[in-house]
Image (cartoon, rainbow, N blue to C red; front, side, top):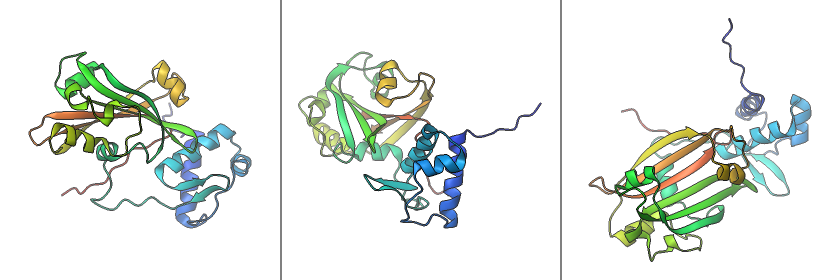
Amino acid sequence: MSFEYTPPKYAQLIAELERRIDSGEYPAGSLLPSEHTLMAEFGMARPTVVKALGVLRDQGWIVTQQGKGRFVRGRPSIPTGQQPRTGRELLDRTETQASSKLLTAGPIEAPNRIAAYLGIEPKASVVGRRVLIERDGEPSEISSTWVAADVGEGTALAEGADLRQGVRRYVESAAGVSLDHIIEHVTARNPTPDERKLLDVKSSAALLSVYAVACDATGKAWVVVETVLPGDRHELEDAYPIR
């Protein structure tokens, strides 16, 4: 019995385009071949090509310029010890930095997992925000934030306007604390019916859920940020010293 693994077609295309960029065949700043050109060369359907290009874009290999096409950026650099960690990026990202659509904001009941992270009673009131983020006009991720009601009420976190600062700044100001460290939890699951519609994925799709729990120096959790990512459009990468 053979156990050889053949990568899916879009993954094969990603690997080949990365090879061409690394080799200089597609130099930085050059215009990437069009979707139709790639479809003809590799004998792939348009959705397969679009999926591969979306992954390369999200990973930083290429950039899309509206009305002009896709341009090569080159291999993404990962400076040792300086790569932004996922949780910190979620806490510091503003809603005005990306193309985003605010879905909900205000008091809600805490989901069981969030209540456990925050150390509060299940279904206790919290202030929540839920945002759909798009890249190049396509849904890319869903970002949700939860803070205890006594911290979030009366702040911009509970309002319907885009946040002009990162979540961390609002929480530290409202609670009068300094956030010291982040604990990340990563899970994989299938989408809910709502997520299927928002992210335009199938019911069998694999989603990555990254929970960033921000704590003060004593270990008390003050805010939880979750980002839900379609697994075929994102790759989580980190770099840190082993010393």
